[in-house]
Length: 291
Image (tube, rainbow, N blue to C red; front, side, top):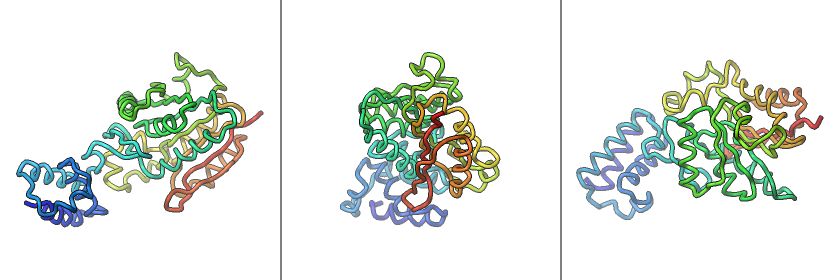
């Protein structure tokens, strides 16, 4: 079969299975199999593909048609110029979280006193936030925390893969994990960033199959109303942040009003609510209580 024939048949199959952007998915999967840039395929439509590569492409397309995430099939996801390893052990990085990383980088880069700055990525998962911040802000001391050993192993490999060797990874459930051999003390943090679980438990069953069946549930389930981890951060983070230091959080659709009330009631100062690339409110920036 030729490149064009594989793409046409793959696109038809994926579209029939309800996969969004079926042609793009077909191109990315074949590009992965052939180890060629996707746009290169357009110059090789008439090229005959070996039986082995055809069989491999067919199997990947079949799995994608069963709604296995594209990133799990290729093994990587792009995040702000970094190619990160992903697997069912970690949440697949999404464009919304790139906006969160950029906001954190902007705040850190705008500091008049560039050093020392201590940053914590709370619930690091793949390490995407910690890696993007450490790469863009070389004077920052970046810490990354997660309760999953498998996630931290992935994040550590991703840091090496990205050439970022300054991140300190910590295993444990929340701030208690920082109280032992972390190098951090309460009141040390200049910035805290997090993409916590924010899907209400009752909404998990209605998520797209790629998310519902393949992302780790612990990275999705935010409790009955989706706000469990925000309440925890509102209570516990002030002890670790310097007075007036920023906390940046990604949140779900429609959660902005409840979160603003939650943090303001806890003595935090609201700085901004920023939108994602689709124009939806997505990022909350608050400042820790000063007294």
